[in-house]
Length: 387
Image (cartoon, rainbow, N blue to C red):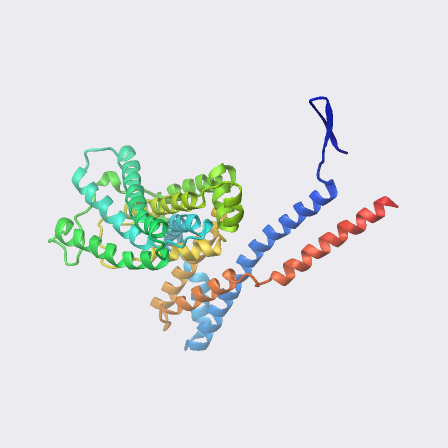
């Protein structure tokens, strides 16, 4: 049926989409969404299987090592808590990279933002001391971390926009510079001479997040991470800005044609991603450390990129990717300390995950067959209904 509309005495018909065509589109979208999840899970499973095969091949006691790799991370409440604590920065850095990934601007400055934000937050916390209660101190530190992240991400973003510089190269070069700046601040402004290693004075109690769940000792930073997962998911899929970001990333020419400022949106997304990386650094210091003691890049920024790839830039799936990566890392630590397996083998697993999840053709044939069968079934049902 067509909707009849009266305009200035003339009768116009407003065409409506065929319900059958709409149903096919909805089913196609549903199949594509399900297959994305299947691709991620399959990629993880294959990488995990390869990890087991590697352990069997290189270990003198493969059965024991495989058992430790699979069950070791769950062998004690403390190790389970370590998985969750390790997943906290992975979640926040993964959310940060989702913004970069969404607009196809791989600004990798999050690696050094994480480090410098933790450094600045510690420096400020030492200056304030216990003058502020925790309920004020923690949000203040998160805001400071976000500001540091936004400022630093501005540099490669503006160079990309104004000078047409390669944002990947610029951000990678800046990572080394900013990391050295954080180390300089630690050595000359915060270093505690009373300890045997390079580290700052202990941060005040008001900025040390309490632990949860008894023996598991899960830092309450997990609550901060979950809140940001919910907020960013709503931003991505329930707001105009989220829709604009995803449109700019998936089809920039069409976005420009409909009047969107692709440069402005990608610029804003990079600043938002940088701010989240700063929040991640601040949260990690408050959640897992009493001192700032990072004298080299932690690697969390690049871990965030891996999590974003696993999640296919979908914030809702970020916790799954973060927990899986944390589980594999803890498993690698277990077999490294209890067996003869070098910790570096985890790099092989990460590479396989990236290859399988990022490869668009992985399981694409199966997905296309499902869509084709769905369309054929709808066509057959329509023909049967007209008889």
